[in-house]
Image (spheres, rainbow, N blue to C red):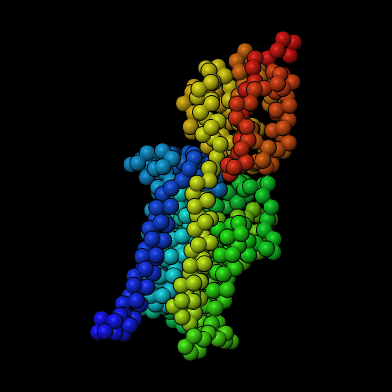
Length: 518
């Protein structure tokens, strides 16, 4: 009877609570560990942007500014990649690991940020969401600067909090360093600086807040540190760009939030809706009593400022791109991903019961997990298949042509054969796409003359055409190159065909020697 009473008494109830807590802790640790592993798992070779980054980073550090004038990016990430490759080489795995490092460091940083804003519940929810974020994982395994940009944005939020809470010169200096580093990482960081600066200016003017003035000082110093790079930025803005990509429209803000939560799949859409609901709760939700949450008319101070800076930078970027008709992609605003997830974590923490908080977090984790696993195993580029065929079948004297030139960087870095390689439309080298005055170059391209010159260059040898009609804006021109090579050399063999399961698709045509009379 005594044993039975113990089983049903307060001690047994407490043991059940401890077991439930243990299982919750195990689940949290498992999700974070899985997120860590996925930050180093990827399939297939580098795609265009990654291969372009590696090719540029191979230049000596002193030559990086000149090389980047032909690309359109600031130098910090490329300098880091250059130094990394000096030590660890330029294999696909090695260059992608560099992006995984800031993605891992971001996890303890986001825990600390969440705790500073809303205590342990916010810190735990934030790290779980960032650990399993499909967006964060995608760019943790891509040789680009976006993972570093996400880390810098979280560090910037810490710096702003430190300036407002401590007001030390060290905190102001830290904000200046993070501001400069962000600007030297990606130009869209200027929109985050503008949105944050507008908020601090309002506080300094309306509320006479000395901390806001110190924050403004840190932002200004960071911007001044960027001034030496401005001449190159001005050259890039005049001469480089993506002439085929449309500017954003009114749906860009929601589309970007969808992308932060995983994209267009049903699971990602569900996660985006739940995350937006949690963000609303974070702003105006209050616990009114046991098991109750009410929506008020006043805003929670820190979550509101964090979300205002995040959505503000996104809105400024969209408006500027619409006005200047510049291309836009959600990854350019990667700095908002972690900050948005912290706001979502604040909303989850407001929920009135442990069961409700766990349920909302579990819905987000399950929805995001499916997207993560799918993305991790999705091949990126067919460049490996094309390069394998060329290495095995191409012979000295053959000519390999890339149409458009955007297929050159990911494929050429994998080739080990000694064939001659060139690109359409400018007969340039395939390792790097030159974006300077790209629109003018394609407008003057002549597929017929190009095909004739390629055929004459190859002579009795074969012509291998790596092509895609999915890469804008040279679809019609590449189709013309194909037709003219057929007229000169006959119907080609096609050892590699476009496979839509890849993100970057391409086909390979083999043209034999010119027929008699052609």
